Length: 80
Image 1 (spheres, rainbow, N blue to C red):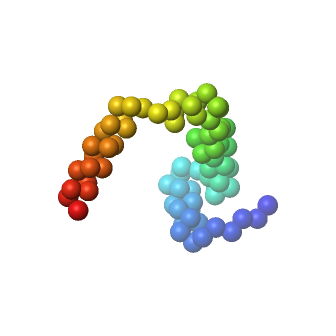
Image 2 (tube, rainbow, N blue to C red):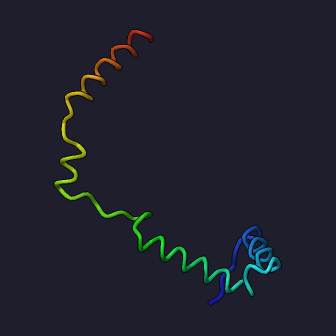
Image 3 (cartoon, one colour):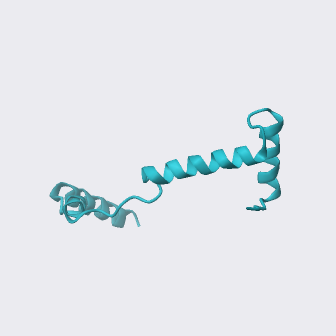
């Protein structure tokens, strides 16, 4: 596989290799892909959709917050 990186990323990899962090740019890219794979598998970037029960809990009416929102909206109108 051949990959072309932007100059700044290529320079970053070169600096990592020069500092001895990695033996080669290929090793650095392989580590980056491993980390991305781990992140993806943990679901941080692609969380599963809410279940119906979870959606109900999240979006259920909340009388206390609705009161706060009404009071806050009224104050905002009076400042305009």
